[in-house]
Length: 557
Image 1 (cartoon, rainbow, N blue to C red):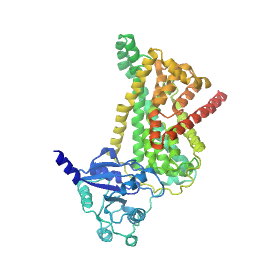
Image 2: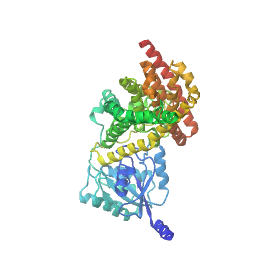
Image 3: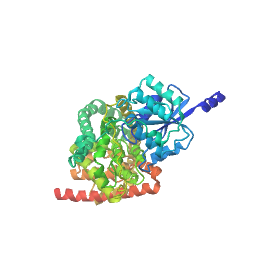
Image 4: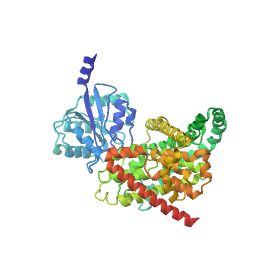
C-alpha cells in the first residue's frame, strides 16, 4: 500500500495559477478543486498565501493558487509568486479576456516564460467572449492551448474544457513581436463609480459608505438584542441562575458570580454574535460586488496624506472582521507602506468581537448612542496616529491598480464566508472569552485579581477612573472582548460612572494595545522588534489622545 501511495505521488502533476490581481484565479481554483477555503472574492490581495488542492475531475493534477502579481511594487505576496516560478512546473496563466493582449505582454515582459509549459485561461468570459475566428487566430499565434471561461458560473463542461487545456499545455515560445499581432479588444476600461469621481463629495461619500458598513449592522444588532435580552434573561438565565445558586459557593461564584461563565458568557454571546454575523454579511457583499475597492480607490488621494494608499485600506477594512486576517492580507501591500497599514489595523480596526463588546458596554450603561462618536473617534485618531508615525511612506507609489467590475453577487461564496466567520466566533473566540471569565472568576474568588489589577492603577488614577475598572483594561490586552468583564455585577460598576468616564474607559481599553494574538502575528510577520515598536507607539498615542479627549469632555461638561 505504501508503494502504491508513493507511485501515486510521483505521477501527480502540480500546476501553478499565475496572473495579475482580480483576474479570477481564486474563483477558478475553487471551481476546479471544490475548496471552500479558497472562496473567490472580488477584491485585490484576497489570496495571501499559496493554496494547494487536487482537481475534482483529475486528482492527479494538483492546482496551486498563488497571490496576484503586482509588478509596480515589492509586496511579499508578489515575491511568494515569483519564488514559485523558479520551479519547473506547468503554468496556467489566468488573464482577463477583456485585457488579453495587454496582460500577456506584461507577463511576457516581467516573467521569464520561455521554455516553460504553459496553458491559458481567459476569464471574465461574461464581459467579453471573442468570436470563433478570433479565438482560432489567438491560438495560432500563441501555439499554446487557451480557453475562455466565466469563473463565477462554471458548469462541469466548462471545468472539463479547462482541464483539457491544462493537460495539453505546451512550451511557451511566443515573443513580444508575436504578441503585438494579438487582437486588441474594444472593451471600455472599467472606471470609478460616477458618484465617487466628485472632487470632494466623492471621498466624503466613500467615508460615509465605509462608516455605514459597520454602523448599520451594529444598529440592527442593537435592536435585535434589546428585544431578545429580556426574553433570554426571563426564560433562560434566571431559572439557570436560581438552580446553580444552590451549588457549593466556589462553583456558584465561578458560574454565576460577578465574572461567572454563564453571567458574563451570555453577555458576550448575546451581544457579540449578531454583530459578528451582520458585519460579516455587509463586508462580504461589498467585496463580492466589487464596490469595496471603488470606495478605497476614491479615498486614495486622502490616504496618501497619512502615509497609505487606497490599496492599503482593504486590509484595514478586513480588520473590522479580524485583525489577524487583516495583518496577513497586508502582505499584498508595498514594503514601504505595510508597516503603516499594520499600525492602522492595530489601532483603528475594531474587530467584530471588539465592536460587539463595546456595544454591550454602552448598552449596559444605557448610552448605546455613544457607539457612533466612539467609531468616529477611532477613524480620526487612527488617521492621526498613522500620519504622525508614518507620514511619508506612500509618496513614492504613483500607480493605482485597475478597478474590478461591479458585478452580481456570488451568494454561495457569501454564505461560505459568513458561515466561516460564525464558526470562528463559536469555536475560537467564545472558548477564549469563557477561559478569561474562568480565570477572572477564580482570581477574584481567591483574592489575586486585585493584585493583578494593580498594574493598571496608575492609568486609572491619571484619568480619574474607578479602580474596579482595572480588570477591563487588563483582560482587554488578552482579547478585545475581554473588556466585557466591565459588565460584572450586571453592569453595577458602569451605573456608578459618568458618561465621560465610560467613554474614556472603553476608548483606552480598546486602543491602549492590540490583543496578544494580533501582536504575536505582527511579530511573526515583521519581526518582534517591529511588534514592540507598533505596540509602544500605539500605547503612547492612546494615552495622549485620551488625555485630549478628557480635557475636551471636561470643558464640555
